[in-house]
Length: 298
Image (cartoon, rainbow, N blue to C red; front, side, top):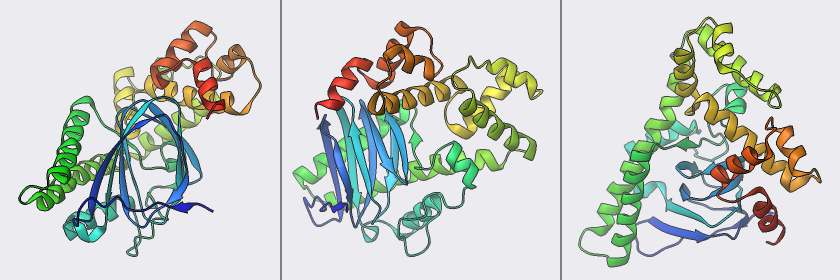
């Protein structure tokens, strides 16, 4: 049974921010508050909603109360955790967040992205992760660092300032989360079907060389228009999406199989061992062998 994690309570605001750096994994736990997570550097696997998701620098997500989750840390990783209770922020902002999550009014935390069709959420993202662009990352990190200074110094009006800073972060999250949802549903039905076909094709043919120019042609689209539609919905370009999927599956094989490195690379559609190692390190911050060593020595 997951343990309960206590609220980090540096003041009476009902809002707290912690900046964690390290390589120690976190076992399954729950809490009675909301938690916004932002990955600044490094990588980890987040186990949540019966899904394992590779998290990279720039990823952010919201965990609702009474929801079990855990982290498998792959390397030295920098994570910001912003914890808060609903009554600590403006009710209008909280209502927007509940709509973005698709929660029932009781905010039980069990219906993340409930409004999204099951096939769509399974293919793209059941965990509600958003990937911030570089300018957004810098902005969000500066706000989080400012909140940490506020709760440390506790100058005049610091609790109100923490509240307003958090509301800005949550509104950015809500906007980005809704954007992906709306980008999908504003598409004509044929484009919605095309995007789902592409995701299914990638999943089913991961070991093959996937030509996105050919996929676009098959859908009677220009390559540029196809890429735009793909990124509008998934938040990633086709190449970023498939590389992320390949490295995620490679991590699963490294953790749970006795396959050789070349077999693992081939099983995710990469037949150049050097390229596989470079791509893996680009995503994970360490080589596949360092990843194995770290995983088995926790």
